[in-house]
Image (cartoon, rainbow, N blue to C red; front, side):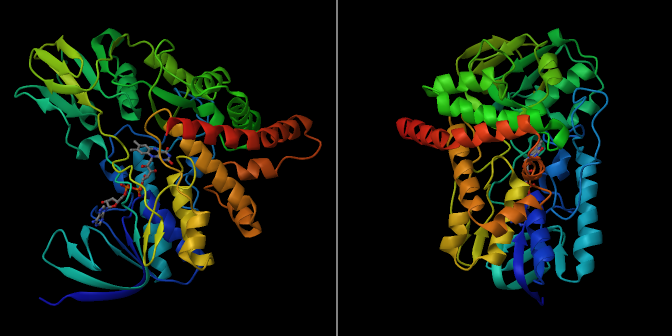
Amino acid sequence: MSVETYEVDYLIIGAGAMGMAFADTILTESDKTVLIVDMHHRPGGHWNDAYPFVTLHQPSAYYGVSSKELSKGRKDETGLNKGLQDLATGPEIMAYFDEVMRYQFLPTGRVTYLSMCKYEGEGKISALMSDKTYQVKVREKTVDATWLKTTVPSTHTPSFEIAEGVKLIPLNDLPKVTQQPSNYVVVGGGKTGIDAVIWLLENHVDPDMIRWVRPRDAWLMDRANTQPSDEFFMATMGAQAAQMQAIAESESVTDLFDRLEASGVFVRIDKSIRPQMMHGATISQAELEELRRVKDVIRMGRIKRIGLDEIILDEGALNTTPDTLYVDCSACAVGNMEERPIFEGDTLYLQTVRVVQPVFSAAFIAHIDLTRDNDEEKNRLCQIVPLPNHDTDWLRMQAAFMMNQYTWSQEKDLRDWTLNNRLDGYSRMVANVKPEETEKVALLKSMRANSMAAVLKLQNYIAELA
Ligand SMILES: Cc1cc2nc3c(=O)[nH]c(=O)nc-3n(C[C@H](O)[C@H](O)[C@H](O)COP(=O)(O)OP(=O)(O)OC[C@H]3O[C@@H](n4cnc5c(N)ncnc54)[C@H](O)[C@@H]3O)c2cc1C
């Protein structure tokens, strides 16, 4: 069988949010050609497999690709996100990426999109639905937009044993439940666990019917402090300033987390439990109130086995009943925490260069690839801002973020680029401040005044923990 060949400037593996944001910047800022390959039948990556009631947890205003707005420019008037900017739903995100591909990318004539195809390495691509294969000759870069290996409940295999007859579903199947179980056990304390509990409560399930297995509690960020518009300046930039002050004035890591909570930057569901996890998820105060209604929280480590009458966990066993319904929310969104340089010769590994901002990061990396000359310089400007898992990972993430912000601020073209990029949530808010707005000016001044002390403090804490 003959092998079809392509020759392109960039081969992008993965049409998820990061691959799409990368491609968008290449297409907007150059005349290069791009081939995008993905195993899904539509662009959008893991959103293809998401649960039906998923939404973004950060405002739509800074998600997607740079060249097309995702937000509807409105605030929610009802529900648990009331008063805050809109959060796109899964179907909205899918429709958005489909439009970007069909109406922006493909009409340029510079994009080849191979859906339902697998990249095998060495430029070889195989179709999933036939034995067709393709060979790609790459003139410039192969872009690995799969490095972070995002995993979601519907596509992962639980790491615990499940006895025959136990009813366990991914949260994707919750809306399909037709028979009321004796009770629900939500497995997982991360963002999907939170979404499952809220969905059950919103759908008339009594909180006493919910048992929540939370091996670790999480530090969360108040979503009210992540709103990228002038109206929210004092909350959003106020939280940034409070964070800087908390770091600079803290006397230990524990004291730092206490200060971050006291100033409203961090929140937690249960104030009597010290969180050990930090994934960068945001939450509203109304959502927190809802979650606190569930009292049967199991903190006995991870589940090892679910039987019909017993749940075995790391730290003991619990009685259960055969007609309990288990909701699997145990997938860890980021499947690969390993870091490697982003620019490595003719291959580029997309990772985050700003605090939990994957799409901004992908767009920024594309811009750097187009405008800088060698890998050393490109990697200097694209230091990895690691995605956090444990609470103390926040220190390294924050330090790396602050160093990148400082490095970029020294280069005028990068200051201009971030200011004009819609995926940058906050730069415009800061640039819009007028000298007569004294309260805002004072807040920014305090933030800058604390920044050097904050970086040094973070570096000390990181060294102590090493
Ligand atoms: C429920 C949920 C909510 C989230 N909310 C937000 C939010 O509000 N804001 C935010 O910034 N981030 C959010 N995130 C983070 C999210 O992971 C990123 O925004 C982003 O969607 C990740 O995209 P990605 O392109 O890195 O990965 P993916 O979406 O996983 O895309 C990778 C793609 O690569 C393809 N692929 C893999 N291997 C191959 C191969 N060999 N050949 C061909 N194709 C391949 C896969 O099929 C997949 O489509 C959320 C994540 C989850 C799970």
